[in-house]
Amino acid sequence: MKRFLILFLLLSNQSFAQEYPQNYFGSPLQNDLLLNGTFGELRRNHFHSGLDIMTQRKTGLPVLAAADGVVNRIKTGTFGYGKALYVRHDNGFTTVYAHLEKFASPIEEYVKVAHYEQESFEMELYPTMEVLRVKKGDVIAYSGNTGSSGGPHLHFEIRDTDTEEVINPLLFGFNNSIRDTERPVLNEVLVYPLNDTTVINQRQQVLPLHLVKQKEGSYRSDTIYVDGTVGFSVNSYDTSDKSYGKNGVYRVVQNVNGTKTYEMIFDRFSFDDTRMVNYYIDYARYQEINKQFQRLFSVSEIILPLLKNHKNFGKVKVLPENSYDVKIDIIDFHHNVTSVYIPVVYKEQSSVVNAQKEGTVRIDCRRDYIFEEGPVSVEWDAQTFYEDTALIIEFLDHGIKLHKDTAPLNKKIALRIDVSSMSINKEKAFIGLEQGNKVRYFSTWKKSDDFRIRTNLLGTYKIFVDEENPIIKHPSFKENQLLKTQDMISFEIEDMLSGIKEYTVMINDKWALFEYDYKTKKIVHQLSDNIAVKGNNKVLVSVIDNVGNNVKFETSFHLN
Image (cartoon, rainbow, N blue to C red):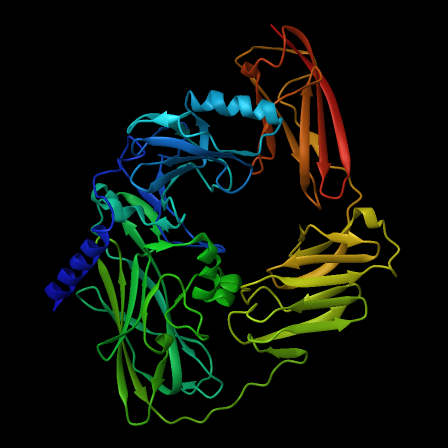
């Protein structure tokens, strides 16, 4: 049986590989491919769209063109991918290299000219086809930690050029450069009652299963006794040889009495579908305890993009006088498998419907809704919620407690607050979301006393007023200090409430490129840009926050 399973997995991966060229793309790094992030991995609000390749915790490693092509897109930004290159290839695919420290010549020169022409650090360029042509193995950039990167690494993607869908790079033969002899790690399995009358082991709640590891490496749970319909979820991760990253798994399959009832394969998806990760996981549990459980069932009939097979959306209906053998296989790309066996037996059990808390509203996901009280109203369209949901809605004085962020949204909700009765500085006011001791700013549409936002997060929203100026501090040089052309200069900029909207630095009344890293709060300029001149140089830093508060800071330095 084990030999048959391995053969099936090999044939399955080979069938995927036949769609994609196996020797066309080379490694984007000169060192071994060690991963700390895999394709489809469960991330906050998205499926991971590529491979995160380790760079020895360093920045500045040469990044190589994976194949001949042309650079057809370049992005530089504070968040997201930071500095990123997109290379279009003649075989219908595009490779993406992100979180870069800097670009290699002549790309760096091309980008630098554009920065100064547009007088902006954040920009997106689309070079014409013949301007920046590269050959396979050319150094096109250097690895970094820019954008929303959590540490130095190279994010690498392969996209279908026409559809812009992202595809698992391991399907193109990169798996041959990665040694993986380790099985995925299973942490926990949960069983869920999927309606108000289902009872599991005398309880009407989500239960963790007691798992016992078998000698051959699989797991077996205690028998669970069920009256009704249940679903399962798993908390697991994958590793590979020489890599300590807790990465996402490639494939998860659920079988009931030998019949496949749910199968997820992380091979290809569209960016339009990536936020559906919040529907795939147990979102409430993730928000509450920061653990991601992959649900092997769907409560509603929404089809996930990575779902390949299902029967009754993975739900297991336990009928009288029946027993069920549930088997879950967690599989990595290199065919290593961790299995868990769950015996399920029908047992008639009394059910008690749990009383709802006061203020709870039962939401039908197929309906439009409008709630209004006093100066506050909130509304949303049908299918804003993925599934029927119980919400606690409490209207506040010029605010609303809209449950808490434990139910994912498929669309945005509209929130309106009339501030006519508030004695506030309306120019400096905005609608914000309370997040612990912090406030999340939302760009607020204002017309007289009518304030509005659109949001895809539940939580407590109120009117906040920001009348404090941003802060400019810690210049990297002292007033009139003597510097060299090889030096860089920096400042720290910060805003405590609404956040920084824009910043500008002038050297001798000329715009100077300062790159912003929100993680360190620094803006940095290379004096080799030749904006500064020999002798004395005047510097003027201006920062504006999201409600218009602004601050200026003047200093000077000497250049030898």
